[in-house]
Length: 307
Image 1 (cartoon, rainbow, N blue to C red):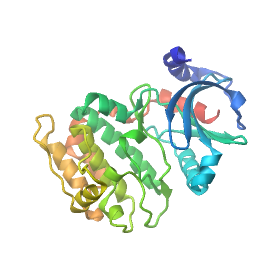
Image 2: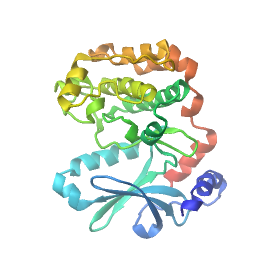
Image 3: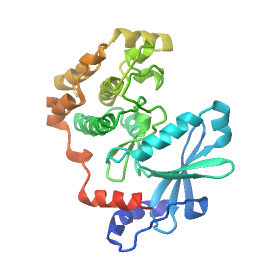
């Protein structure tokens, strides 16, 4: 199957002209050809798969019920599935459906051909300002969409950002997300990306995602998170103090540092809004239009949702 991925990715778009479109609603493992593993997590694995009837390439996330029982994650998984399946944005990874058998739960996900931004960042060390700005702009647009639907992601990090066949950013893994109009109190997410209000166990809202945009922008440009330290205690301390410094380097502009500094603000009400991020000179100057979705891709998305 691996040798067919590139062609299948193009075929997905070409098939939009078909007169007969798949309309299957009830899924089982028999509907898919299973390919190579794409990744392994604490609770299961992700496989490349092809839906037999339409030939569409998807990612099949397999979660073991025994692990869900062991760690009492029923509510969290159900919330993740409900939230992600309700979102439809070019920069949010689609969840098309799910099914289960006696031992496993299967999530049918959009396949992101180029994998995690984390791998790209580790390979290259850091990103160019144009790359970084394009990803931050795409992420900002996706978060604006999520926040408008009262969804806070709460775990934005390079491992949860994927790239599709065309290099378009996709937010994935809504395991820590929540849909709520009120402030939340659960401390969750990943250490280096936690906002001060979370570290201090205070109530938080959408602004925790804005903080993470600042952390990510810094990491994209410098290759490491801004508050990384040798111990968890020291990382917490640096976050709470907003102990932010910019190493001297010629490839990071003053405008980029300005954007980061206006996002990494302890008072959540004073962080730059998502709208202001899109209007920031650094974004305007450097971001490409990769975050938008072409008419062909919109049509493809419609077909995929009818699978």
